[in-house]
Amino acid sequence: MPVFRSITCLSLALCAAIVAGCRDRHAGDVPRGDTTRFAVVRDDYGRDVTLRARPTRIVSLNPATTELLFAIGAGGRLVGRTRYDLWPDSARLVPDLGPGMRPNLEAVLGARPDLVVLYASADDRAAADRLTAAGVATVAFRMDRVADFRRVTELLGRLAGDTARARAVVDSVSATLDRVRRATESAHRPTVFFHAWEKPLITIGGGSFLSELVTIAGGRNVYDSLTVPSATVTLEDVVRRDPDIVLVSPVEREKLLSSERWRSVRAVREGRVLAYDTNLVARPSVKLGEAAASLAALLHPAALR
Image 1 (cartoon, rainbow, N blue to C red):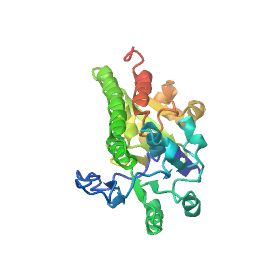
Image 2 (image 1 turned 45 degrees about the horizontal axis):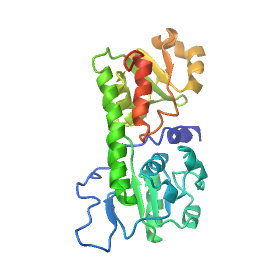
Image 3 (image 1 turned 60 degrees about the vertical axis):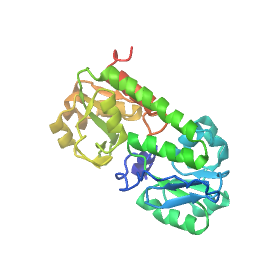
Image 4 (image 1 turned 30 degrees about the horizontal axis):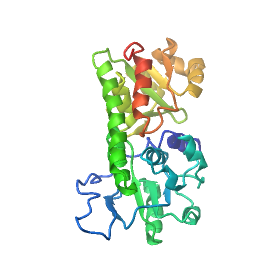
């Protein structure tokens, strides 16, 4: 289904807001002297998940967490991924277990994992419960915001047994985001419409990391007042909001520019339709800093020179 594929390729960035209570400050703490537990974390279903030992066979069914596991040095322990997990190149060597949403549980269990990482959507709740009932430690995280990247990276570091490397990844990405923010903070902020899908017309709301990246890059999302990660909108409303710039994937750019329908949008008529790099601006993971820099280069070409 095209819309589902689009949402997946945007790193599940168009799903609902963060589950309340997932930031328990005690999550992951193991009492001193307790040798029966390797790690305890609270996932975004609100469940406390306990690992008794360092996981050696991990299935990650979220492209963002797959990237993060490789970044923190646990990629060699992955025994399963989704068909969309194509970065880094080493991820392609991990067995493809199919879709991330509503996964094939027979295939997942066949990989004999001791840890499964899911995306915390309503569609995956039943899978998490069934895997847990089968005796497999299963955690589910939402990754809609930049703060989720930081939080989930640190939790994965606890689960994988390398908190120092996880913190180094967070610090490195955060430093790049801060550098881009400083470079664009005094620039004029063009208003931006972020085109996510055409039929139906879906845009990015203020509840998405993509909207945050636009802000960091020196723009303002015309739909940043929406609290959801994404929303279906009408072309008439886009015309009314009159964005200075339309951000779109390279595949869609020429279609918009040649569309008679889209000529009702001033930015399209005047050729201000910019293609973002889908290899960078895809999911809230280790490329967040590069993604912000690439958007800043579109909105303010001289800012990062």
